Image 1 (spheres, helix red, strand yellow):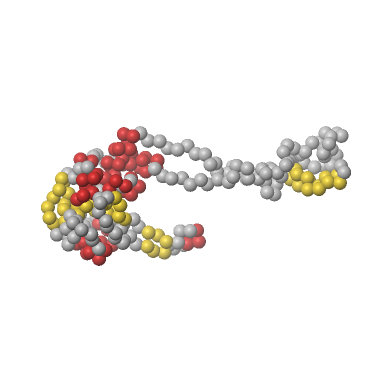
Image 2 (image 1 turned 90 degrees about the vertical axis):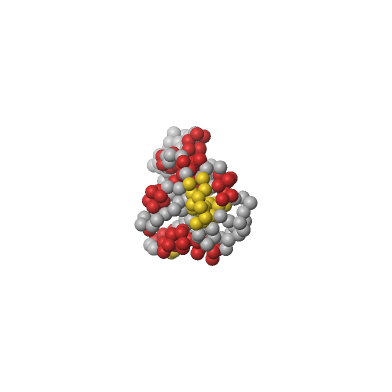
Length: 254
């Protein structure tokens, strides 16, 4: 597969042969599977001892002549803790069980969960498929509706000798994607509705992914800049993300 080379001004300089992984047949099922496996799940559950930190084990006895018994008092056989006592008279408070104040919760989330697994060969196919989807027009236009009627030359390889500034990069995006260049930039907007009260005040799109070599020092605002060796499936999922590669990054990918 061939890729188009452009310079900082957006002028075409020729074509370059892409690494063989870009010729991989895209397996959407394996990419989705690997994406789910790579998710990091935060622990969401109460403490295992929550509501069970009382000296109220067992149930109250209703046997005749039993110590601390409730024979003839008409009290339910629920675990209770003694708040005070006067001889054989006790003041009890229900504890431990779910209907008691400060008791345990019912059917709470568990800390243990069964982690998903994926074979190493499937991992390789998933990663290669994610890279290959960035070079296919149908996947890119499917992800970005505003680019359906735009002539896309994907993937774009940037010939870079030194550094590039944010202003120069935005001008490059205008020449590549025309009036719809804002699709490639990260935009932040305020959410409507009750999500603002639930820690989801702002919405933000992913924007373009700039893949560079480890030796290249590039700092651009408005896009994600990442080394070629650090790219994961999560960076490229859903398939068809706008991606810009440097010539040196393709050597590392190869």
